Amino acid sequence: MKKYWHVLGIGIQNNLTYRFNFLARSLFGLIPLVAMLYIWKAIYKDKGAGGMVGTYAFAEMVSYYLLATIVDALTAVNEDDWQIAADIKDGNISQFLLKPIDYLWYRLWLFISGRLAYLAVATVPLVIFIFCLRKYFVLPPDWGTFGWFLISAGLTALLQFFMSYMMAMLAFWVMEVSTFIFILFAFEYLASGHLFPLNILPPAFERALYFTPFPYQLYFPVSVYLGKTTGAELAKGLLIQLAWVVAAYFAARFAWNRGIKKYAAAGG
Image (tube, rainbow, N blue to C red; front, side, top):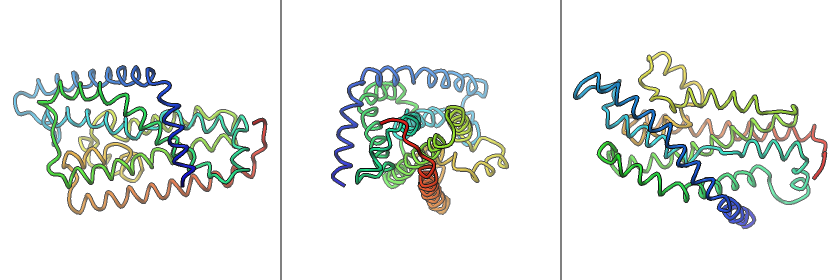
């Protein structure tokens, strides 16, 4: 375990070297958020005072997008899938086959270090932005709800990573994985709740999405925070989310074990 703590420390140091890039990315990342808030403000204005979209008042809708931004900052894979694919193509994984270190866990700790570094840099502009919209920001119903939200967000991060790792394993079979990564990103962006809360969709579409892992990559933890998912539904959702994490982990292991049999070092 000590070696992975060392990986975490080195990863944080390396990421903080590019802290200005993180700051610029976090600031420019707020631009789409501002655009979405203006769109929803116009929608609610047409509905008059006390208007609702689905089960969301305007303050809850603003909180939804602010929380989605926070969860995304905590859990989103940045360039890990590209780096893993590059390691495979360039032969850099050869060193991990000769050392007592597991490549998957090595990349997971690097992913965690990247999220911690990004959060450290992005916290200030994000807090200022939330402070400016504080009258619309909804707090969780109670501390227990906030605790379940943190657990769900942690599972979301693991699910994001293992799915990206599994997609990067395609580099063992194909020369260019960018198309597959973009396809996965497109499905995730549409079906995970980045654009809108999933429970404003027709019930049939919403139920269909829950047969995929995508709602658990963003919408589910946000719905837990807002108190939209409670009781038995919360317990069931967390178990399903955990099941998707376990399934993604074993799928990633399986892809590695199959891919390494085809691997031929081209460098490194």
